[in-house]
Length: 281
Length: 103
Image (cartoon, rainbow over all chains, first blue to last red; front, side, top):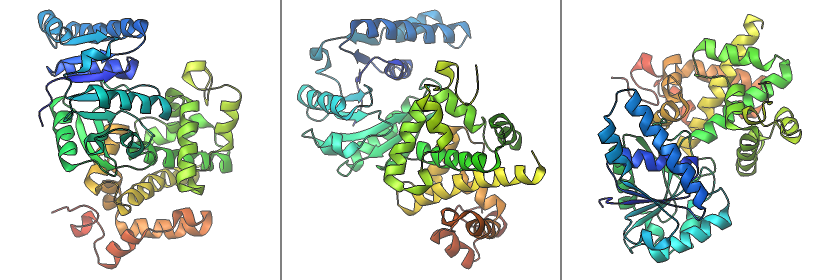
């Protein structure tokens, strides 16, 4: 199937980045949000991203304008009636997402695809509220989506091979790297990252080696671009703990949340965004 | 940090990364190739976990895991696919075949 027009539902940073990536590849995009001010912020964010490319001499100002013109902002469902693909990027709340999926199923043409950018929730459960579970999948971008190359293309229980093929092709068209993943808590990247984080936290607890020394050793050894504690602080410790708990529930002991992480979150030390986490900022 | 302790840290980090990747593969969640791509493109690792293990040598990785399973517990137990590959002599880069093909 050929994706002629994309709808992005939810104009947060992730939604805005995704819209930018689509438009930058020449694909018309409609960004829909119920909140007018979120759309205004998204528009400014996208303008900044294009401006940065122009400033670096990557594209001309006229090209940037042409690509920006491919993006339409709307609060109206009616604007979505011709979308061949809808990417849901609203908050990570199953009830909210289900309502969005039900709406999209009603509004979109019957052959159009509906995908979620969720990093944690069940694709099959989302698919179950639609009449087209074979055309529902996960399409998981990584933050920040305008820079990170990977897209996890996630199949639920009923996702068809055609749907996955279309999404893989689209990912390549927008200059991303697709990997095919079967649905499971954490998918691939977050599951593996959290497993190594859990091990490092266990190591830290046993040895009491300071966080900064561990990060330095990891970076020096060349096995990862950033130390795990700095990465967790950047991601947000509340987000990390949430993922950690989901994985603990699904896979058991090796993901038991570490006391150091729980203590920090309890104190409201959530990392970079609160200026205190494993590090002080 | 004492050099020995530092070596343990790096090994535990690498093995935990590798072990979770093997679980994903054994559960049929994703292919070996796609997991390596995902960890490079999505987490910025310079080398995918299977590439790492094949380069270290799967026989060496097996010994590492047996050792750590004794001291730290069953979360380091060697996975079935690793035991099978080593038993077959497919120990990675050195033999031309491991989780990945190196011909």
